Length: 202
Image (cartoon, rainbow, N blue to C red; front, side, top):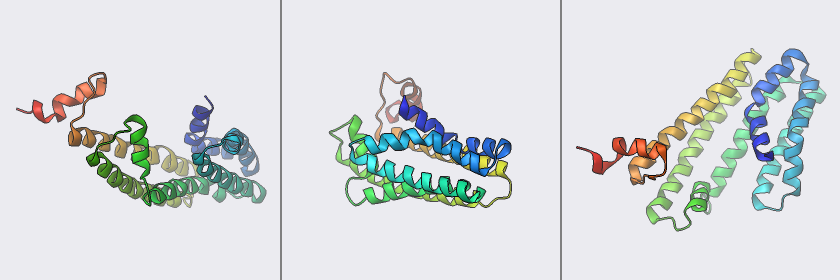
């Protein structure tokens, strides 16, 4: 439940900041965001896992910028936080290419005996995600400097999430076509097989 709460807070960050700036001020908005992020920071500190180090660095960096925004009453610093998050993901995906790509790690959680062609695909997909994350970084950085707080929230929220979601959807469909692996228990796979399945083509 805690992870779901954290995901909701991060996902709604632009809306939370927009509401805070509309009805409060920069300082109290920063306090509100820090309070919402506090649970995740404590959890990352207490967790004894390698992945927690990445999360901890991300959350502490966010907390530092948000605290600085509150102290200096800088709206720009509040807007800068999504760019920092995007950079941490970019670094995480990029550094993973030195060893086992992060997409391969995720894939092996579901399928430990990953075939060689899937391993190659996972490395290529990790590189593709790097390009997507780079594009998102440019988007949210540019958005930080727009004049309207509402426009910033739209760019960093709906526009950015649609950008990510479109890539995820396109990659999913391409992967199904590429490997022809359709789970009969999955409703989506059953719908896609007649369309993408090579053996079902006339």
